[in-house]
Image 1 (cartoon, rainbow, N blue to C red):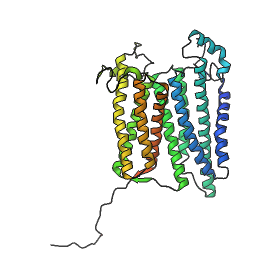
Image 2 (image 1 turned 30 degrees about the vertical axis):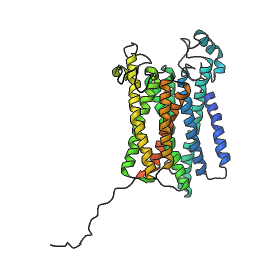
Image 3 (image 1 turned 90 degrees about the horizontal axis):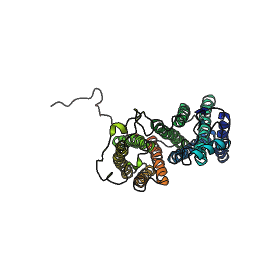
Image 4 (image 1 turned 45 degrees about the vertical axis):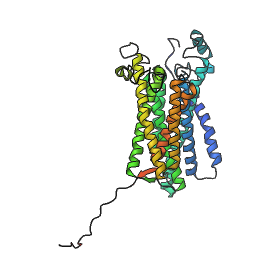
Length: 393
C-alpha cells in the first residue's frame, strides 16, 4: 500500500451494498420458494434458521481468512484500493505482490478478504429482512389479532445493531493492522451474533412445533449456565492465542517445551492494548509471553472439557435434551482432537479452521440447550390452613 492510500475509501460503498443485496437474494428466494404456501411466521422461522447457518459459515470463512494471513489482503476498507473487487485493483495488488511476494497483499489474499466482506454484507441484508419482517408480523398481529412473533421484534433489532458493531470491528481489524485486541473482539462478536440468532431460531421453531422448554433440576440448569460461561472465557482465551500467533509456543503435549510449567511472562502476554508482536513501549513481545498466552488456554481447556463432559453425561443420565447431549459430547471430542493437532502437527490449516468451527458450534449448541430448558421451580413450603386446630399435649 502506498503512503497516499487512505485507510478508508467509501467510493465503492454503493456497489458493495448492491452486491450484498444480490448475494442475499439467493437465500431469500430459496426460503420463499420452499415456503410460498406457508404462513408468514413459518417463512420467518425458515429465514432465521437459514441465516444462522450462513452466519456460522461466515465465522468459518473468517477463521480461514485470518489463518491464511489474508486479513490485510485489501489494506483499505470497505473495498480494495478504492474498488469494489480485486479486479479493479489489479495494478495496485500486483505492485504490492511484486514488492513482497509473500507479504500481506497478494491477488489470492485479496480475493479471500473481499469474499469475506461480500458474505458479511449478504448476512447483514438477511438480518435487515428478518428485522423488518418481525416488526411487520408484530403490527399485523396487533391489528388483525393474528399470531405474534414468539420473540419481541427488539431481538432482531438488537441483532441488527450488533451486526453494525461487528462491521465496525471488521473495519478496525484492517485499518489498525490486525491489532490483537480488535481482532479478538471481532471474533467474539461473530460468536455473539451466532448466539443471538440461535435464540431466535430456537424460539421460532419451538413456537411452530408447540413445544415448551424442558424442565431441568436447579443443579443441572446451573451446571449448564456455568459451562456456558466457562466456554465463553475459553473462547476469549482461544481468540487471544490465535490473534497473537501463539499456537506454536508449545509444540509438545502434555508438557510444554519439556516442562509442566515452562518459563512464562503473564504481564507481557496479557498486556491487552498493543500492536501485533509489540508491547506498549514499542519493544518486541517475548517468547515467554507467547508461552503464557498458549499455556493459559491449554490449562483452561482441561476445565472446559471436563465441564462439557459432565453436562453431556448428566443430560444422558437424566434422559433430557438427548440431541444436545450428543452434540456437546461430539464437539468436545472434536475440540480435543483439533487442539492437539494444532500443537503436534505444526498448526495445519484444516485443523485450525475446524478448531474455530468447533468452538462456534459449541456456542450454538449450548445456547440451544439454554433456550430449550428452564430450572424446575423451587418447592413451596407446606403451611397449615388458617384456623386449623392445634393438637395440645
